[in-house]
Image 1 (spheres, one colour):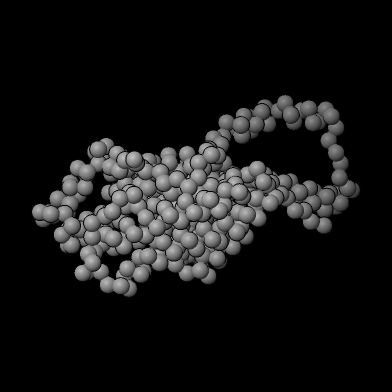
Image 2: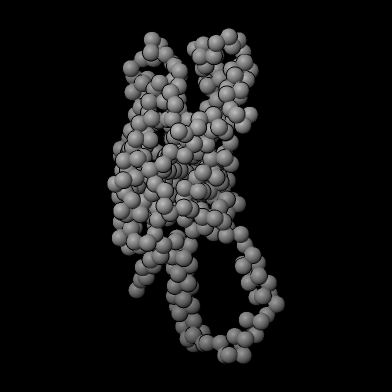
Length: 339
């Protein structure tokens, strides 16, 4: 005897399976004591009004549900930087999170940390190289086997290596493009297959593919053409995917953050962008890392770099709304204004 539970949310399915499993255990073990015996109406009334039960019920009701409770989100490049912050924030909203990254140590550490704080939602790490089709396919399959489906794909994994036309070698350009541009295509390709199947069983349910793009996808970037080119292309993919997938209630949008100065991409003392831009002379007259940072801070009307909470507000909007698709949403502090 078995049970197949189907619902739009993982938590509801898990509750049904837990109740069924408990029922089977009671049915089995009660036979050792003469068979099951049911509570009388008086006993049911006593438990229902018992102070301990009332307290348990009150605590259960008062638990914070979170804006995305029960949803299943897969975040690529989630072991560090923006991806790490996005995974943490989604988990805080009671989302089940698949942490996908090539950095096994950092990814497992994040999953274990989140699970140590969890209530009903869980975090799961999977090794993934978004430039490899087989790795992406396995990533999607592992997510489905673990949680039963995917509601939200956050395509965040990416790399940046600055350089002029004279300096950048073809193999470096190809590597950046393979991860930033082709990687987004591969993730959307295999995730959308699962989402289409989910649409068949629950046609009213909306799902999301969200690419973490960049302000460099909205405006060219001097001596950073490999990164900017991939991001410009990513918005083209977003618009095209959106047209193809909206009949399945799959929304596809890009979030275009400004510079995340606090993250390792910019601030790493060995290979961060502040160091790279100083070495390549991208900022005229800059002699120190502080000169480079000050130059970029002055470019932002809001007076600071982009933060995780800024990006999360855009992500939550993209997920919660049910009408916009194919959009590139700027989160740049006014540095890039759409026309």
